[in-house]
Amino acid sequence: MISIREPTLQDEAHFLSAMQCSTTLHYPWIKAPLTPDEFQAYVKCTEQENQKSFLVLKDNEIAGVFNISEIVRGCFQNAFLGFYVVSGFENKGVMSAGLKLVLKYFFEELKLHRIEANIQPENSQSIYLVKKNKFRYEGFSPRYLKINDQWCGHEHWAITYEEYIQDSPEITQKDHINIVPNNPEWMALAKTEIEHIKSLFPNGLILDTQHVGSTAIPNISAKPIIDIQIAVNSLDVMKIVAVPLLQKLGYEYWAENPDQTRMFFAKGMPPYGEKRTHHVHIVEPSSHHWLDKIAFRDYLIKHPEAAKEYEALKNKLAAEYKFDREKYTDEKAEFVKNILAKASKVNL
Image (cartoon, rainbow, N blue to C red; front, side, top):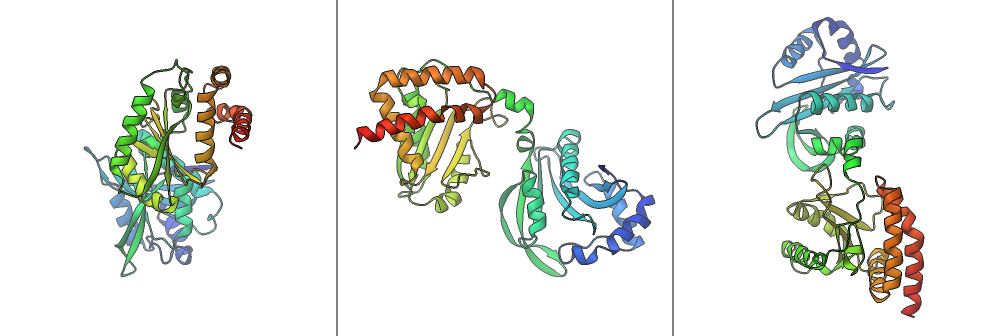
């Protein structure tokens, strides 16, 4: 059983024994308290209002430590996270389970909004731990902290309350599939959003933009989400440039997307908003995403009877998989494949 609790002075002997046998494991990343004086100073520090510390216990044995420091309230509601494992408990999932409990306390009990972990880039195990638990990479600062008398650069990894709750059942239920009647304003809304997006990017980065998806097809019902596809020369460049620019318009980036041939952004997606309003797909023009989405849209525009078949299928699937976007999309795959095959023959 894995649990967490705050350290007390009664933990001194057990704590120091655990840390003294872990010095090789901790070096050169951190220096844990190793003497009675250091431990007592550590416990005293944890009693301050802007500090919290937790021991991770595996069957009542100290397996690791998490420290929450520099808690700032007011408009910031932020803190920093540090941690280290005890020798013998590494690579066993103990710290990951402990971190989940710490985050639960941090967001649900302390009611804070954001926590940041600063990690040296060579410390791959610590980076893996936070990344596994939904922390997001925010950047790198050279000569950020003094470690072992040397100024060391650190990567910044952070998680906000919205990211913490985004997979909760309440949010999943809120982010449901909703098919509505065709809105003639969708075309104009797409055009306006495209102009906003293009105005943010330096000249030459965007090759083309297209309104795609069901809202780009006249006279059929659709999810009221404007899909915009952007063609660029290089996804590698856009992974540096596009994220902060689109965040200015309220888009959230899906960094964990397993499909490395596209970048995907959503605006208004719960818990970041009340409901999705826009999707942005960034791809290279040779990508099947670019070619297929345009071919599918154009075929349905030219063949209204096929568009109505698609509308009927979507209504059926939305009723069956209202709260399962992945299944809803998967069940459309065969229809989309057939339409693309027909579009290909038309273009031969």
